[in-house]
Image 1 (tube, rainbow, N blue to C red):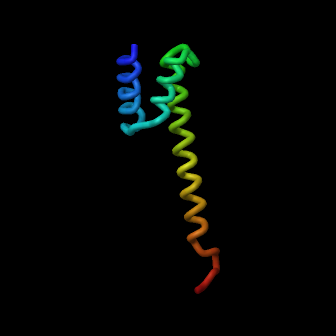
Image 2: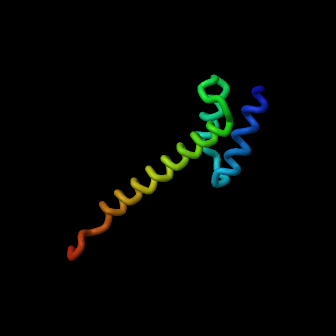
Length: 76
Protein backbone atom coordinates (compact mmCIF):
# COMPACT_ATOMS: atom_id res chain seq x y z
CA UNK A 1 0.00 0.00 0.00
CA UNK A 2 2.76 2.45 0.92
CA UNK A 3 4.62 1.67 -2.32
CA UNK A 4 1.52 2.52 -4.33
CA UNK A 5 1.08 5.81 -2.48
CA UNK A 6 4.72 6.74 -3.02
CA UNK A 7 4.80 5.87 -6.72
CA UNK A 8 1.55 7.65 -7.55
CA UNK A 9 2.72 11.14 -6.52
CA UNK A 10 5.83 10.70 -8.64
CA UNK A 11 3.77 9.89 -11.75
CA UNK A 12 1.37 12.71 -10.93
CA UNK A 13 4.19 15.20 -10.49
CA UNK A 14 5.76 14.23 -13.80
CA UNK A 15 2.38 14.73 -15.41
CA UNK A 16 1.71 18.09 -13.72
CA UNK A 17 4.14 20.43 -15.47
CA UNK A 18 6.98 17.94 -14.86
CA UNK A 19 7.77 19.50 -11.51
CA UNK A 20 7.60 18.24 -7.96
CA UNK A 21 4.44 19.53 -6.33
CA UNK A 22 3.53 19.27 -2.69
CA UNK A 23 -0.11 18.98 -3.68
CA UNK A 24 0.45 15.47 -5.02
CA UNK A 25 1.99 14.30 -1.78
CA UNK A 26 -0.81 15.91 0.22
CA UNK A 27 -3.39 14.25 -2.04
CA UNK A 28 -1.75 10.85 -1.53
CA UNK A 29 -1.76 11.40 2.22
CA UNK A 30 -5.45 12.30 2.08
CA UNK A 31 -6.20 9.04 0.26
CA UNK A 32 -4.09 7.10 2.74
CA UNK A 33 -5.97 8.62 5.67
CA UNK A 34 -9.32 7.94 4.01
CA UNK A 35 -10.17 11.64 3.66
CA UNK A 36 -10.55 11.27 -0.11
CA UNK A 37 -11.99 8.09 -1.56
CA UNK A 38 -10.31 7.96 -4.95
CA UNK A 39 -7.03 8.93 -6.55
CA UNK A 40 -8.99 10.72 -9.27
CA UNK A 41 -10.49 13.12 -6.73
CA UNK A 42 -7.09 13.43 -5.06
CA UNK A 43 -5.43 14.35 -8.34
CA UNK A 44 -8.09 17.02 -8.90
CA UNK A 45 -7.26 18.39 -5.45
CA UNK A 46 -3.55 18.35 -6.31
CA UNK A 47 -4.19 20.29 -9.51
CA UNK A 48 -6.19 22.86 -7.54
CA UNK A 49 -3.24 23.30 -5.16
CA UNK A 50 -0.86 23.79 -8.10
CA UNK A 51 -3.19 26.30 -9.76
CA UNK A 52 -3.52 28.26 -6.51
CA UNK A 53 0.28 28.35 -6.17
CA UNK A 54 0.76 29.58 -9.73
CA UNK A 55 -1.92 32.23 -9.28
CA UNK A 56 -0.40 33.42 -6.00
CA UNK A 57 3.06 33.61 -7.59
CA UNK A 58 1.71 35.59 -10.54
CA UNK A 59 -0.13 38.03 -8.25
CA UNK A 60 2.96 38.52 -6.11
CA UNK A 61 5.10 39.16 -9.19
CA UNK A 62 2.59 41.69 -10.49
CA UNK A 63 2.53 43.49 -7.13
CA UNK A 64 6.33 43.65 -7.00
CA UNK A 65 6.52 44.84 -10.60
CA UNK A 66 3.93 47.53 -9.79
CA UNK A 67 6.02 48.76 -6.87
CA UNK A 68 9.22 48.88 -8.90
CA UNK A 69 7.75 50.62 -11.92
CA UNK A 70 7.39 54.39 -11.69
CA UNK A 71 3.94 55.85 -12.12
CA UNK A 72 2.98 57.12 -15.57
CA UNK A 73 4.48 60.53 -16.22
CA UNK A 74 6.93 60.24 -13.33
CA UNK A 75 10.41 61.59 -13.99
CA UNK A 76 13.55 61.24 -11.96
